Amino acid sequence: MHRRFSLILLALVGFVLASWALGAPEPADEREQLLAADRAFDQATAEKGIDGWVSFFAANGSMLAGDEPAVTGPEAIRAFMGPTLAQPNSSLRWQPTRAEVVVPGLLGTTAGRFERRWTDADGKPQHRMGTYVTVWKKQPGGAWKVVFDTGVPDPPEN
Image (cartoon, rainbow, N blue to C red; front, side):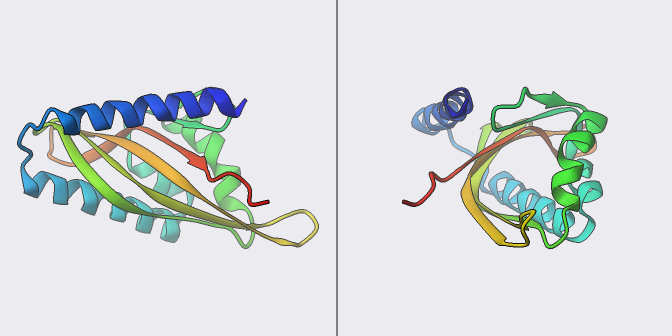
């Protein structure tokens, strides 16, 4: 269950690391644009919930969470993430720690840490942190949109 998700995340991280190893020059301004887009994605989600979340995905964008199959397109993403983001006393926040331009002017990635807080059915506050990777594609109008997003929570503390 977690194995499939971890393998996909590992493959994405490998892709990002391989692109860094190639040493291709990256426009610093595009890295900054990716970081800014990721931070705006976080802020829009914090302020607008599911509407903010969905607004940052490209029309053919996909996401993968946990053991669930990947979901693609705005309506499927809304149906999948809506209940999570609508939970009372819940939040999903993240901060990018790295951005890379994979194909200048077209494709980039961000990676960072996320934090999710919610209240369980017994009223007990819950907290989970983890790592995420987001793949971005520059749209014809110049905006960066999410084409793939995934994250994996940290292992439970013992």
